[in-house]
Length: 283
Image 1 (spheres, rainbow, N blue to C red):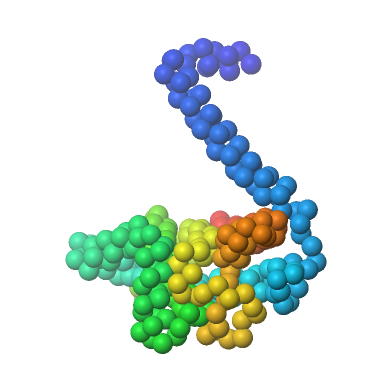
Image 2 (cartoon, rainbow, N blue to C red):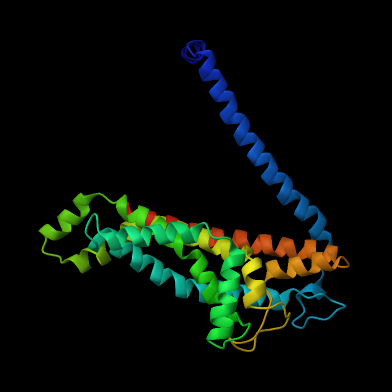
């Protein structure tokens, strides 16, 4: 105990200021998060009724079940499109492209530019290109491709940084055992970088689930069970926006927000468990 007290006595005033600032920032952030989550739960849980989970939406029940199905469907399809392109692009940038390559600089500049573009611009592009030019109309497929373009920069950058963090000794050891470039990437480098890749996918899922502006132009706002990939639909985030905007269904909007929060936490929890398994295999 005396050693601890002596350690604190040796601290300078500037160290104490930094210490107080760090702890204050952490407490304020946690408090805001707890307040937001608590506010949604308190306002929404009392209005969670069985009618909200009815398979068919009507003006009487304000069912969120079609929006829930559409959200899960869009998350799965968007990841199937974006993850392979994002991961393979990052592998090329780190493992195959030569240093100082002009193409590498162009790709990185493009991904950084895409990451800063507002979602409404992606929505306009998706509406003009996928919905009109390709003739898909406002549909789930048009929305998924638009979202895939939106989350590509996140997946590319996180995968690239994860691959860069792998020590070159792993690659050299694989080469010394006679493995080729492709086998080294597939068997050694990629599994070691998997925790970081999963973290990028989690960030991408969060953007998919919470997106509204881009989907208004590409998927529409029809609330019904999807018949096929060319059907219009409404995600949970869009459902909350529509209910709250109408002004007559605020309670149902809060209840839907609770379900959306649970879905996000569930997806993040599943992704985190997958990430831990990869870390345990590596260790």
